[in-house]
Length: 241
Image (cartoon, rainbow, N blue to C red; front, side, top):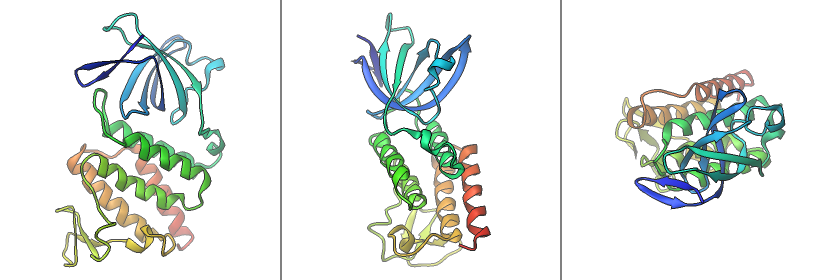
């Protein structure tokens, strides 16, 4: 058997699956890896030979089945992985979807740390990734994922229950019908699928997310998130959307 840490408790388990969030070459072809697992935990360990050409499945964002082993409680996990669905290789030629996945991975790496459990964080991410692979409206789904993430880590932007309120106060993190300097017209119709995407909707959503993320979670924005935001805004402005 092997062990998964949950706070100060130890859970017996030798198989799981998850999304690869981070990898680093540590010796020859060995990798230090970090996964977000299906039970909302961060799992770290070593993959021997993981950087070899025969084992090129260890790519950021990929889903893998994982077999875990430990010689003793103080040793890191020895991890063996195999590719599982959904398969993300199909998006490697799509710069927008690829950068989107990288932005999500960057955000997750900052939002959850090893030893911490954030309930439903895997589920909301898994739902988005599967929808992105088959839906044309995946940009809208990405915006919803940003707000879903804020919700599971304790900073809910409840636009479902506040559809009758026009503005969002970014200082108070609440909806209002009173317009002030720190309020923004919230894109309710866009998120409810009533209107097409526009760059001004995206700018507002990004601004709200960034304000909450920087002020309440960690005082910096992930570089791949910034890259994706700029990529999308440029595309929408260029096409007058």
